Length: 236
Image (cartoon, rainbow, N blue to C red; front, side, top):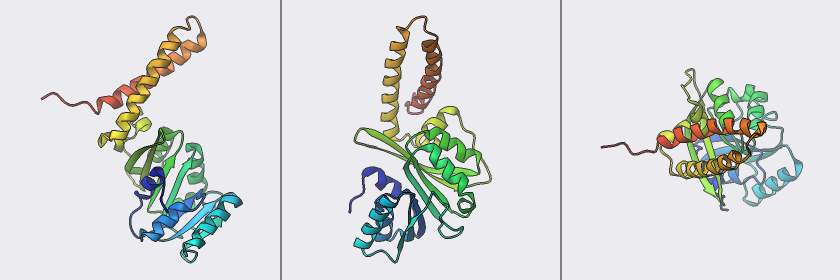
């Protein structure tokens, strides 16, 4: 079984010896991968929908892993007991849903060693939530697959928050520190798209909506330029 590039990167953030709850498991590919390679001791494959869960259960059985991976119908972490696992994975869902799952499952989240998150939207909002709710983003990765960009993060509990600039919430403090090449490619695309929008808005003279969007866009461009400046080669 081969994982997609996105899921392979998500699995790559899990450290050996973990017990994992994979939320929204779909086909169960990530827990199967982790257990087969000895990265996870055991796993719970969770999904809110019976159809995907049945597919996951069938895949798990086909690899002879039913004793080590349990398929469980659950809305987020609500079907998991505190202390039952030490890692949660939430990949391939919206950022708002990721936050809701963590909030509603806080009793379980508080017992975890770390969380692996790969939100599909509102990524800056997720980073801000983590920073403001007792987490530190220890590691980030980003991959490009089929023309789409996927950032992901490993968050650990902390008693000490970090200072964040707005552009770091938007694009990822750890990715920027690493000068991640995929982030750089994404930023260049962002800047091109922002320039195109800026040009179109500039032709809509007198429109209040266009003026409002232009002001918003100027802030977005500022964030992108700040992020790109982190990749600049210093003068020697």
